[in-house]
Image 1 (cartoon, each protein chain N blue to C red):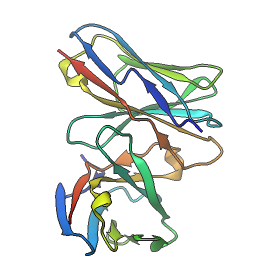
Image 2 (spheres, one colour):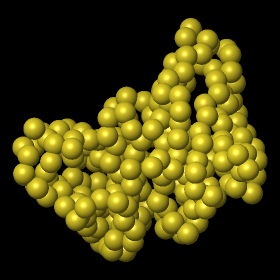
Image 3 (cartoon, rainbow over the protein chains, first blue to last red):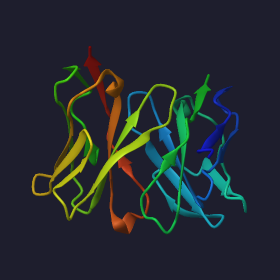
Image 4 (cartoon, helix red, strand yellow):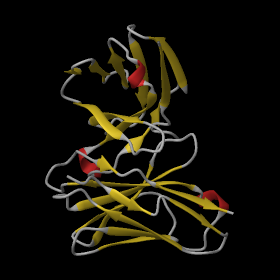
Length: 113
Length: 113
């Protein structure tokens, strides 16, 4: 049973560029949440997608956007990259009808230079 | 302003002894708390949770205690094993917030053989 799959595992981008990160949820899960984990900090909630719509959003600028596809997979897009966007981006999937029970992926390590 | 705090960045414990990891929160709306464990290059893994209607939850070697009046919870690991060495995150959520979790900055536990 595959868990949450994220791609790519590592990425290096230049300041000002745009990046797309991908996530396939655990089989049977229908909700995808994205978190940013900066070095030495805990994960911070970016947003959550359910039924192809953004259901909740954390305190992140509009440069961060996302999408969920009919197969429940999701993308995180970040425009106009800043050096401060360098972080580990974690995707977590869950079942909407179960309030709690995240399964996290291993993350994508984004470095902005 | 951090809503979930883990004031000890690191903790070292001898194998076989008890590990106690602490977490404090400021938002009285939080009603569900979780502990996650994270190994390097892996995503966080769910460890144990507790609802605000309880003050203790136990799962094998892991016990979580909740003191609502003090807005404090702790994770006890007994006996500690070298494989427990990881970063431990405390996370909190409120029913009204949906599945948006607020994470603490983590505590790195080292269990020495």
